[in-house]
Image (cartoon, rainbow, N blue to C red):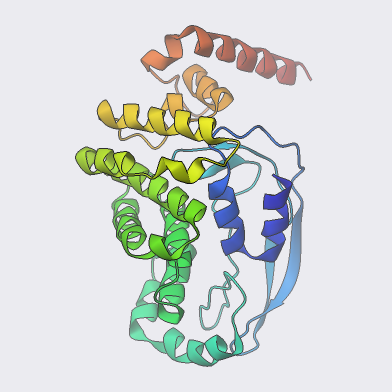
Length: 287
């Protein structure tokens, strides 16, 4: 996880890729959240503005789409130049900075500033600058996290993400391409395109993970994803595919959410996890 924290300091796009490559069942990290506000300078036009980000934060696993559970906002907020709308998701080369004014003035980009998320607009910019870059797919994946679960916007973003992976994943290193294809298969599941999701999972080159010490955990996750596809589960958070302590909390319910009614909540393993969460809540309330 510390490699991910270091990546956060490099660029949001790099941090996104690092986060999604983490195992879905990664252990909880104890890194404290460290928000910091700094003054940034827009690389086009020189406008200066304040932006708050986190140099470090704790995470405790992911959803099947790769969105982390943690102590910060996910996807992480991106700095945006207030005047021209440039989303500063990474550093731009001199040649790219020369191209950006025309892209920012394009009616297509201007239209996106009304109602579309910053990560989606970042994907637009990346595609305009580097049409064959797999970074566009990562940015679109983050855009799906930014959209509300169950919304038409999220479904549209997921459709575009799936299409981007088909075109761009081959340009990524093997392990990144594998991760993108896994997330695309999950997007198909959430869209209810179960036959396509099953085909995509079956086509995954699992030998890509042959030298990965965590290959068995990846295999267990993929098997669970296949079971979710087989039962026609479109939920973004199937209880058997999210961290146990998160699933247990959903089973118990809370102040703003009723207990979830799901057969998974009655399994012996989940019953034990629910007891641990209940005890932790009681200890917290006592203080």
